[in-house]
Length: 325
Image (cartoon, rainbow, N blue to C red; front, top):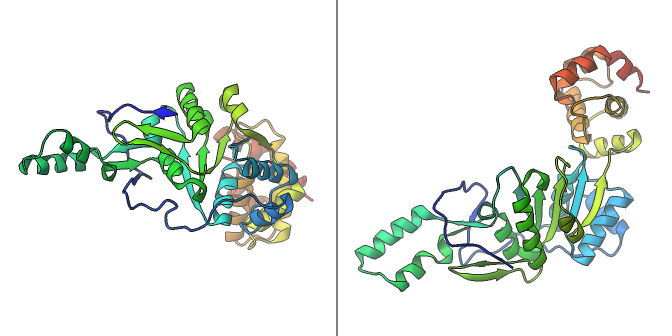
């Protein structure tokens, strides 16, 4: 169980937060619930309705996470579709996607809750003018209506009516990882001024990592694990056409083959599937139906995101395009 201290003196941004009003209905008005599918094949079909093509290995990992109620840790290179798994699941089940974006320096209060100090101050002044003071006034000031939910608390309250995405956990520090492990173990938190809040049914939790640092063994043991690799060219064409059905099949095939060749180079930032999709969409927008050198060179910024990489690719562009069928 996680217990946080009383209100801090600093202010943190409230973007994406929500007030913990007593009348708040978890799930943002969505009525769906996350439930385990009957089979792996059914889960693949369900994800397919959201244009997410999961291979057997990934679908099995998600199936087990849903059936066993365990968090799912997805690792892989940037752009291979880790975050999209959570988005597709939330959309497919008709539940709320609650996203906690990790970053260096994130702490427990920014992930759980904060007090709305401005409204509390105004209310305290109003109480003072009415002559209210003492314990009763303090209880009113630190009541749920002045509590702003951050993603973890919001997910605890939503329970099975939400998918909790903890994105890029590798960007957070060791202390936050330890705190997160405790939350995921108990699915409850104690707010000193209010009491203990726990999830009657735990939400589906998806954690992603780009492996910018190694995660601790304790967190790994708590989760089911799956590595998402780059797809082969044929599979990537299927993904591209599912996500961008407006593009020509020949263009998708040549772009996927070229990107596969790009990944074989010693690049600082290798392109992911997301970059392939962005590339073919840019090419289609310019009226291309096949991959020619001029338009490919003009749109490299859609697929290559580093200056030194661009210089190397430009020098070898004929080779890269020539490798495509």
